[in-house]
Length: 202
Image 1 (tube, rainbow, N blue to C red):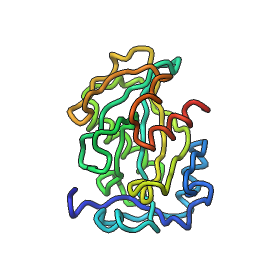
Image 2 (cartoon, helix red, strand yellow):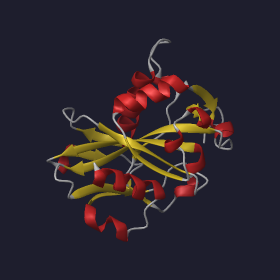
Image 3 (spheres, rainbow, N blue to C red):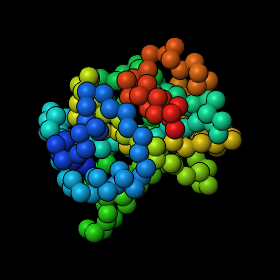
Image 4 (cartoon, helix red, strand yellow):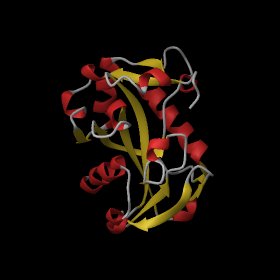
């Protein structure tokens, strides 16, 4: 972890209560998510501080890749900088939003969110079809794990008819496409099981 990295945070008590329960899986439209976050206001905080302050929620774009029929979902094994998630399987591509994602001082929350999400996709996928647009499906949050207590996931999905449209980068260790109805057999990170519930209901 870069000791000087700053990440986008929103104060927990300014977010809707239903988003920050012990285990929250909330279907939402992007407009509603953006409006609530814009009203709450956000700030960039040193990650080393934010990781230990559960009064702040770090906003994480969390993108799932699926086939159009939802029959298959892309998965990979965690091997990145977040050691608390190592060796767990994940279906979420994404990460922190940083000041580099702000193009102008007047950028809206929505613009910063989308820029951060696209940067993460560009960093973690060596190839992605340009015609494919992420669709926002809702938020996930939990206070069960140490990681979950200080993060809130903005869940997006990208669907495709051709899995060859995606080529993983080095960070997506053991990247593969698995049958969605078999994912429960894997040792998934908690956020992935929650996102899967959101995607299934969507």
